[in-house]
Length: 306
Image 1: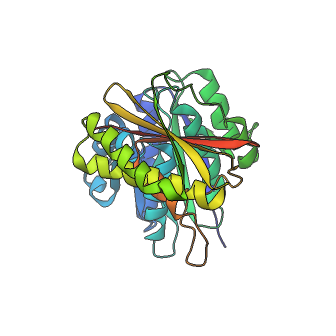
Image 2: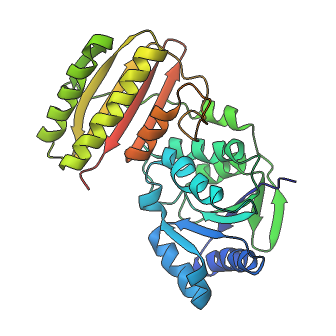
């Protein structure tokens, strides 16, 4: 029987963090379960010290890098780990929401936490998500209740009083994007102008001083989004390009509506028609934000120079 568990751990300091996570990890190791810890690096270091020699049997990732783009966490981190679990249950400590998250990233974080419940409902996995009560805004703690069926506080484990249907939460955080700057470059495209669009994106990326590898990533991501607009929307769209400091930003708009929020979050399967492009975009980019309405969709991607 599939036994998927998704819990929010509310903690206030380092001692409570260790008390909530270390026994969870050690119990998993004792049961022979693969264990992944994907949290911000300071908490990686904290938990490593607490586990001692047993840390060598745990896979650790820095969430600030592996999950900088919340849309990457399910397909690029969690699914990769659970798929390697040899069919048995896995344990994951995942901290996608921490005080260093920006207002721009946060809506995508909540959508991610909600969609975990859909993505893994048929997989044997136990996920524990720490939330810093003192450092986070109270609204983030409220949102943790809406996205986790179970909440852990100290030695108390209870059913969430505010858990909601994942797709309703996703729609609540389907929020308009900040307006592009007035001097953003604009390129219209259709099936005959996809090559021209790729060239324009490459030129912009080089002018933004992105390394060549990152230029290729941006061109590939924008090409996938523009191709989706041509194939799945109304055959044309608009690309907007600008810089925010050293970060290259691109927004692709069309008149289609993205109905299924799981698109791009998990492998679509060998018989699926489409779905790979958006997943690839999530894997390539440092942040992906989506706003979809009845009259159109905007997908905005951010790439840092690295």
